Length: 273
Image 1 (spheres, rainbow, N blue to C red):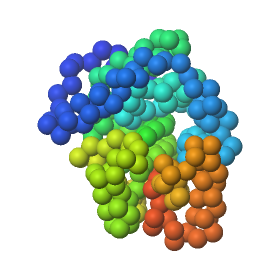
Image 2: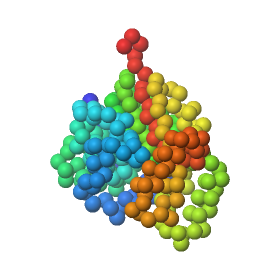
Image 3: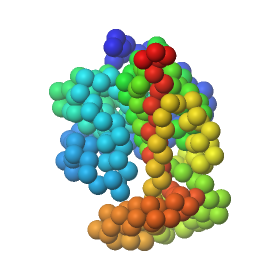
């Protein structure tokens, strides 16, 4: 694949995306020079075995990346981009955060990896049709809207190509209302995940509508008790994830209360293939 060089013209953003980029820059800045690979996190991508962990399931779904052109959509500081490159993919990472893209370029140089890092929005991107074999996204579709996001993914994937996304889901209005209240009024419980005013957790209806354009779809709910992780000792969190996986397997209707979802979509093969 021929991609644009790491240098790109200054990205022009509308006011909403300016807010999103500013928020991301503030979030990334304290960690932007932490370039070393987390060995345990890399192990999850290199040797996925515990499918109660959504990152390991996502890595398994992406399959063998050797020689694949992979787009890391909204790559942040590029930690996952580095993992994918180490696994043999030809990686392009895009993000609207200049701090994130600068960090990815530093990471690529630090690890002597050939990764293309570009400031670019993803709804739409500037790439030609059918540019990638794989598209990965961690927490991006709920920012840009799953319909617009997956429409672009469908355009970018080559025939038979695969997209894998890890997203927050908020299907229960009651749970979402309680969460919003706690985030505003219960800071004494500890630090909550950083969110912007513009993001919107996905619902099952939105997901099931948006994925209809694809030839094959796999959807996996995650995180029930894990949503209460601040109330559990850190050492117990893997056990909590295992319990969640068991509950969701035994009682699929509990997905209504899930806090996370892995979405895998495969593009349609051309007629006659």
